[in-house]
Length: 269
Image 1: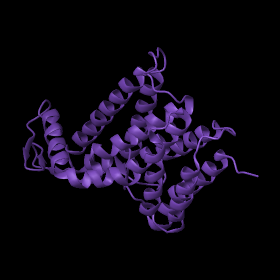
Image 2 (image 1 turned 135 degrees about the vertical axis):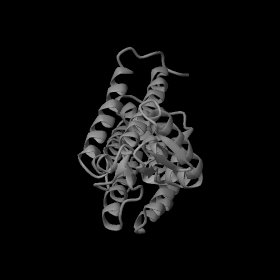
Image 3 (image 1 turned 30 degrees about the horizontal axis):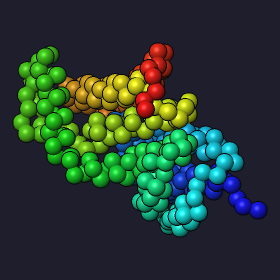
Image 4 (image 1 turned 90 degrees about the vertical axis):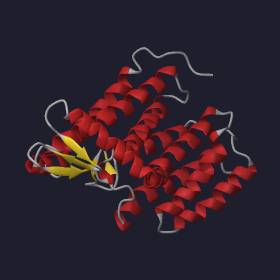
């Protein structure tokens, strides 16, 4: 008896869940940042929702034959990468299948490709892109924080340093960049859509823009608070402020997503 396509994809998604959850626990986190703070756990809300969305979309395949024999052979071949103790190797398999399924006419299959590529972007590709663009991104964020602080005091900037009136100086390190938070917001945005439905609405793109803007603004405010003094730095970087920022940011992202669904606009062609 021929195995339904849905069962093949469930097995593939199970390997993804294993690689996403277990490998970072065994070998350390790959991103180092979740919601603009140092990681306290190697597995975040965005990844969890993305995996939930992936399994739900696969379940919508039912017993329909949506994959070709070439598709199934490719999935089986690249699935060997999950045997390696490397999230990067698993990401190659996910990216291969994601690209292969992305442009399919069936929205269920295309949605699987979208989720796979979003997971890869969050876990690996986003980090590589940031490594290449970090000097420019960090300089831009330093400028934004200094511009905000200039409204409330005689703060100044010298290169990558932000200098308070009392002489206290900080600089933005890569883990504190809003860039990482944007990849989290994008993955969360896509996961929430795919849990609800397969198609994108016009309002979804406005929601994504609003979520990215909220992420950048909240992260800029957090860094501005850290720039006030050493006690403020300890509180907002290592203390209870970390939890506050995480909760506020997650609440803001979920709130924007909810509000975008109150009056949805027509489905995009």
